Amino acid sequence: MTSLETSPTPGLLPWLELCSWCGVSLVDSRRGRFCGRRCRQAAWRLRRRSDPGVPPSAGPGRRFAYADPPYVGLSKRYYRNESDYRGEVDHPALIASLVAGGFAGWALSASSRSLATLLPLCPRSARVCAWVKPGGVPPATYGLHGRWEALIVVGGRKRRPGVGDWLLAQPARGWGTLPGRKPVAFCAWLFRCLGMIPGDELVDLFPGTGAVGRAWRELSSRDLPTTRRVAARSATAAAS
Ligand SMILES: C[S@@+](CC[C@H](N)C(=O)[O-])C[C@H]1O[C@@H](n2cnc3c(N)ncnc32)[C@H](O)[C@@H]1O
Ligand SMILES: [Zn+2]
Image (cartoon, rainbow, N blue to C red; front, side, top):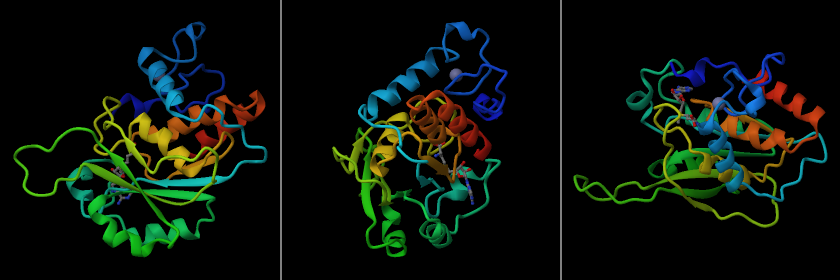
């Protein structure tokens, strides 16, 4: 189990000063709101990748969902030793629950090769976006070798300026070893694809390391006035 999984969630224990990124207890909070350089840089990279002109939500905020399940047919191979492993995910049921969930927008990560199976289950308005990974193909492979992952996006808030439907970014480095954990650049792009703004709620259905929820908490709560910031952090903590 990593320190990420054992650390207290920011906002749950208001009398403790916690790192705004990873949630560990701060030894000396006078040195800032992060426990060290790694967390401070992760938050900085996230902000650099996000939309600087994004306004806080004028109303109570809208609900969005992100589903990052084990990709079709790969659950046992990559996750059989994880504590949250539940076998192969029922993708038709997952997509049906996203459609029926009343979300302002939702996104589903998937392998490019599973699109033929998944897209017929999605609304016709679904958009397919691509997270492309730089780098070549290992010489020992045959034929087509996947170098991108799909992000199926349904609904969302349409904001100006628009956002590109593809991202070029390296896989996550550090922050544990869970296969398929998402890097900061992906998180920032996901939120822009959905048109999310501070004050919105993110339901992260397959949290894994918690990277995506942590990124949204950081981006969302810091731009809110103090009282709403505290409420947003507590609500996110209670939901996670
Ligand atoms: C792709 S990872 C999520 C990564 C996460 N977005 C992150 O950035 O850390 C999928 C997660 O779902 C878990 N999982 C495996 N089988 C599952 C199942 N049948 N139902 C729910 N979760 C499952 C895995 O153990 C893993 O934690
Ligand atoms: Zn930290």
